[in-house]
Structure formats: C-alpha cells, structure tokens
Image (tube, rainbow, N blue to C red; front, side, top):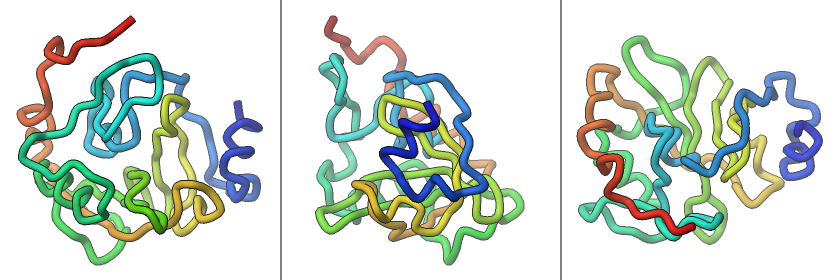
Length: 167
C-alpha cells in the first residue's frame, strides 16, 4: 500500500507526516472528503464502475479553479489567507495543475493535510507542494468554514439513495 502511494506521489518518500489512514474505497473522493462527506462522490466523473458523480446544480461544473472555489463556497467556505489552523474553523487546501483543479484536502494541523486519493486510501501528508511532481499539481487556494456551519454539508448534499449505481 505504502509503496503504491509513493509510486504515485514520489515526494511522499521523504515526508515524515505521510501515513495511510484508511482502507481503499470508491464510495467517496477527495472533494467529498474535504467537504466532510464519506458516502458521496463529488466531482465531474467517477473513475470506477459507478455511473454517477454528483455536483450541485447551483455551481458551475467544470475544471476551472473558480468552479471548485464556488463549490466550497456553496458549502459555507470562504477564502482563507493561509493554512494556519484557526480555532472554531475547518480549513481545506485546493490543488490545481495547468489544466484546472485536481484535488482537495483537509488541513488537520500546522502543515499537515488529510487527503483521499481517488478510489484508494485516505492519507496524512505534509502541506506545501508534496504533490507537485504528480497529476495533482500544487495548492492554489486555502478556504475555511466555521465549525458551526458544518451542517451545510449534510443539508446540501444529495440524500442517500437518490443517486443510481450501475453494477
């Protein structure tokens, strides 16, 4: 498992904060995870055998970095100046490459992020540009949301059972 992830993200080899924290699952992705969901795939498409991927109708659904910011704003986040943890706030880091947004991660401590890697594992890793040598690119924005606004994740995500799954 560890070697596979390092194969995808070589900079993790020397990352003292790198740790696999879950089993593989296609049930959710990095965007859902950063928003606080672990039962919905939020994105443009789903890479496994599922035929669905959910995105709110109210938000432009494309690869522009502004669209990912708009998605997080829909769930109560606002732009943050930096990744420094703040009492009573959740923070996230948004990643992009030259083609558009690619990834999102939770900020869990000073310079430590918690990511979901596609249909694979959740991992802890250092912040900064640990993914810069990969398809995830680099961090382009930090966002924060008051912990008291976490309810927005539950009230604005689709209800379980309304998304069809193909076998």
